[in-house]
Length: 384
Image 1 (spheres, helix red, strand yellow):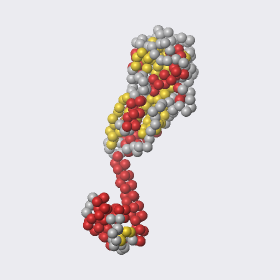
Image 2 (tube, one colour):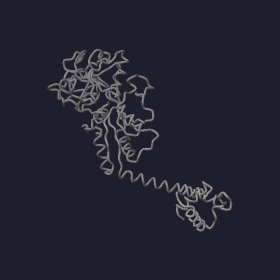
Image 3 (cartoon, one colour):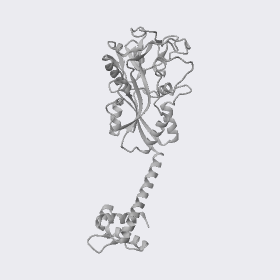
Image 4 (cartoon, helix red, strand yellow):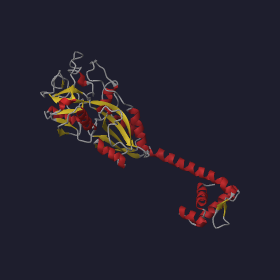
């Protein structure tokens, strides 16, 4: 008994005709008839009644048909399983990353691995799988996911905290996509040293000489560094709290932000709108390290995740409300993922379980302390 004989038998039973079955199978009618006769001789019973104009099942054929269909279904399942296994031996994954993604692994005992590290481990386990990494805004990547041009994406989105509504998912174009939140990050105001907002209402952390600054783009902890007057390395635990800057105070000042269609920009605009103000974004840049560098050169106040100690910048937490963004994995809903993409998604979700809760601005400085939120924030891409 061969699978092809069962397939021919099921097809003839479906069409009620050897001729139509042969056309469906792209075979000759005598070839189909010959194979079914061999099957009948092996089983010792006639399966089809050929006496009328329409081919009908015999009682034995009616009893055998469900088993024939089950055998074909099992064979197809085995084939798909083998293909899936082979799919992890070779394949291609199209991964989108928000512009300015931080791929450098952070340091610290509680640090999450960097995205580059995670991809390297996955590639070591599956050397036949290739990647194409696309850097874009969140809006562009959501469209690419929906159109099938990307398999997975690491996106930045505003959080519900930006509007204060529990039913607010933080975006308006998420239909047809699934999200896995990695972490949530507060935005801060990074002011040039001599800017009017730099130290209003309290002293602010400076990244100038003697502050241990690492320069623009350093992987400073998000939501952790801006709650003290200086870095812990420079002045361990005798730091003074930094007064939070109301979001409304940003109105009328030249701001630096990411372009429209990014999570950071949307979170900033929502927070300003809630505070009854409107933004004046004078300079746009794709990545937070660029914003920090431009602000340090006096082009305006950058609103971004805490950039760490940057020479020429003073960082203040924002409040009333606190603008929040989240980093999330996104993938299409209802469209089966290819085995390589599904395997990578499983690895990313396991590595970045999230969400982590960032430290509240104004928290006490603890020497050597390292939180999961801080580690996640430095490991994950920037929220653009």
